[in-house]
Image (cartoon, each protein chain N blue to C red):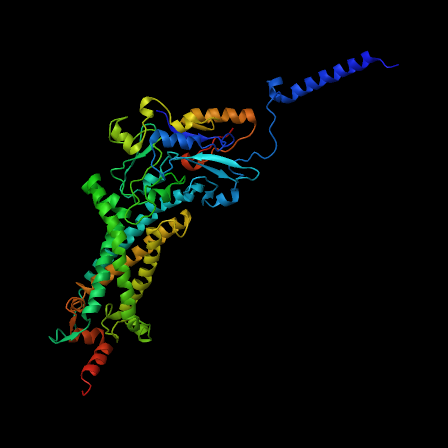
Length: 199
Length: 334
């Protein structure tokens, strides 16, 4: 089975935020919630780098390990998903997540943060039938069930953001590094997958 | 003299060379010779390791610039999340084992070795008022709030391993949701209780020289001695300060978590949650001892906080100076 990953080639990211917009539109993400975002390091200075970041679907996912109600699960494609019916909105997954992926409809813990929402790798959710209206309302699109990759990566104009089987996108990135002569760092790979791509 | 044709020829050569060199300049070096390795591009093309490398070394948040309003999202990567995870599923669980079942086992051993602490002189069947209704109210306000907070707090740490397998996912989520609301709202009566107890009891809980003697004699718990004590003995003073200082620490860290990210960033929130849990577990351990010795562990003790009236012999054995003080006040002629 494929091990799905995201890879952002920071040398190519032009901070256009199309991935953010594509994600919001594909999943009807509520106002105030960003399943994906673009962070710019050294903004306006020499060596500026922009990185598109969402849930990286980690190995041994920290969110799943700290969840008090054990509402996370990993799919056969190694995508980390959670069950919103079980989530109690405690906010622990946000403390544990190295990538700031978990999002909440409310901003204070007082009473409740609401059900956590995060990138599903466009894989929908756990219970409802694939592609059903109920699944869409809770978790967003289920493109994976249709044999499609996440829309953010599919729509990336510079092909900076890659989605797909880890080995395949790693080889695409390695090819680029060889061609252009320098790497741009596979941001988050070491943290999420305890590996990096050496070219 | 002036040969126009030579000038034109020279101009042509110059133009041709310009075009050729210009073309060469825009063709990538490796396109001309596929066998030659690509020329490394020099200049500043930073890798992850080179960007903010110093800030990132500690595992703390690597923060950049973001165009959405949620400034928490500006943290790109924070490796500390994984450390926090490892703490929660490793040391923290052992900390719980040590402070809850561990302390219960110690209390059981104490019971088996020492037995129940009895009143040496037996019951006098004469009562003396130890705690008035307001003192008992603030004690139980704090105590019941604390109990709800302790149980719902422990559930957040170990419920997934202890309660979830017993009741199933859906029931556990229902209970944990209730527990979370309870934890958030019952925190306030607890804080009020701690503040009240501080102001009402602090004058009886200031350290004195005789407290050292109380500890030296094992507090009457270990050994047969009955050390002198005022309204509160040295052990109770310890309980008082554990509640006041621990309660203050829990309140401050708890408020910071009720309004997450209002006072600090992600690294701060992680630290606050560790401190909150640590103080809470130490306090649970101390309170288990307090509950034991205040109820089943000692004859004549629990009445102090239920009816408020204790047996005179119990009072004389545990709080002799306080009895003298009270009787001197109520019977000045004697």
